[in-house]
Image 1 (cartoon, rainbow, N blue to C red):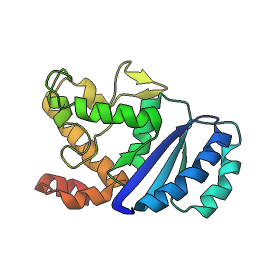
Image 2 (image 1 turned 180 degrees about the vertical axis):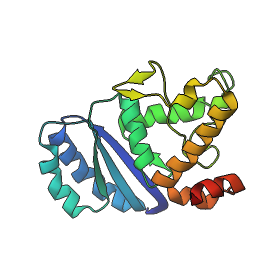
Image 3 (image 1 turned 90 degrees about the vertical axis):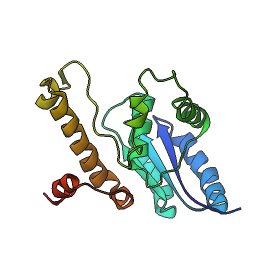
Length: 194
């Protein structure tokens, strides 16, 4: 078939090196047959089963495979989000439950009433052509990392300006090619030049 779509496959793993190697051996030929170009992004949740050593052969023979090791275990949705942010393609495919949940979530978000505030959908990553900036919650300090002071200021205009800047900077850092598809304001251009 060889579809012209670029596909990013994101796999979240934790101490599953044996299963992962078998899966990669089956997945890579399938993707090569189905798509003109693809990548496999492995998000490793700080495994301790020697995954790096076992992955060396796969990484050497398949240049389309990337391994990203997280320094700590996080929830699957956070790990998947890390994979999406590091993926090259805009089309993201994952296996099994993640694929089904992702598809359900993508569709359900646009049904009125599913998301409490419809503005949330408008502010998601890619909705304005940019990645979403960092998100913080309580407590004000977590793992010795404080929430930026501006977010505690109560000044909604400054907070929104900060969020917009962070979104632009995150896009520049992680997916700079997206900036070619949007019309930047003078303020955004100046920020990027600085």
